[in-house]
Image (cartoon, rainbow, N blue to C red; front, side, top):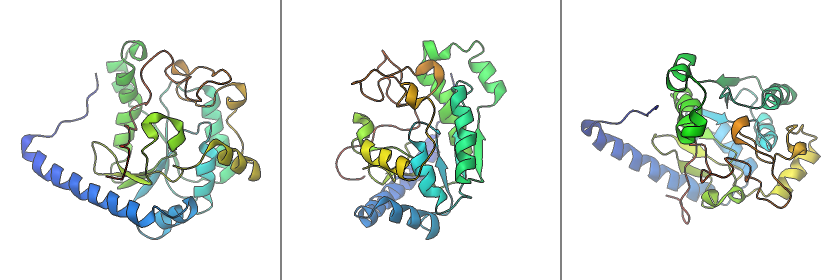
Length: 256
């Protein structure tokens, strides 16, 4: 199984100090921007030097066009990291290329786990059955951690309404296990607002949405959702798993 490196006892004190400093900065940023809207937040993050280096991480999934469109209006050269797990729907791979071209994004970076690592850890492709968390770490979490080296913040498309684990989201939160900050511009966007934005700007939809997939991950771990089900019910169905590992539950209440 793939494991993230553990810090030695000699590193633990400065690591703790760094974490506390980042937590203080997260609290300050949330206090400063909590009453502003999405567009103002993105303008500040992308044009006013709030962070040294910022990237967006996008799944090019069901609702991804909204945030990608908002970002493209400000900076089409922003690095957009797309994780290809080698288990994605073919429709997702095609949609990624078509949407990026439609929006004029010029810096989409496709991130993959090294082939030799996948072959060593999951030679038969069965890890998703025996240990789905380890599969996500191998194919998503670790490759993204590697790709984000050198960035001090990254933008996500998470929304509070998506899951109980996301109800406590703020605009900014600490990326657990690193000193990076996650930026969540769409936390208060509800489905109706998302749909309206897609219609108003005539943005292309992921083709699987019309076929009953309101939330889209890897093909083996995503099923259609019946009418009336939670939109994320098709993710890791019949499992207690709710997140791929890129995002851990956000604490409810005030920002850290």
